[in-house]
Image (cartoon, rainbow, N blue to C red; front, side):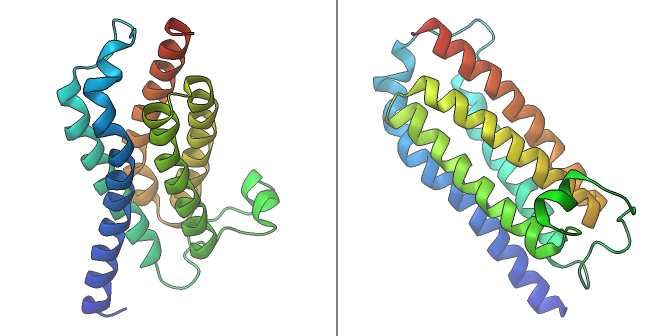
Length: 179
């Protein structure tokens, strides 16, 4: 892969990840002052100023991770795959490839966007909780696949796992407090 192609791939990866955040923010921003500030929230809710810093950073880390997987030569899984049965081989009917890892990554981005609409736009807190559980599973699967192809890519997803794990508990708590 040429440097030019690699650079374009990185830019596209960043645009896709940050674009998912931008689309989600279309549901979020109009509902912060109107709805979100008025609902009951647990004491461990972070200040509003944390979110616009954390999310773009996480989207950037995701984008770099996806880019690293994309630019891994060949199938990208031969150097790091250990023989044996795994949930990836059952789920994907074979060894993970760049295409399968990036495909699940793409599906996860759709779920990431959907959560914002369920929670902020439509105020479906129970559905948002169920959806974020599914999102967390998709992130875990994506991270494991990324790690199998390019370990650094997997490690770059860890802050995202931690944040969405925290967001899952926060979503559940808000749902509980506002039922």
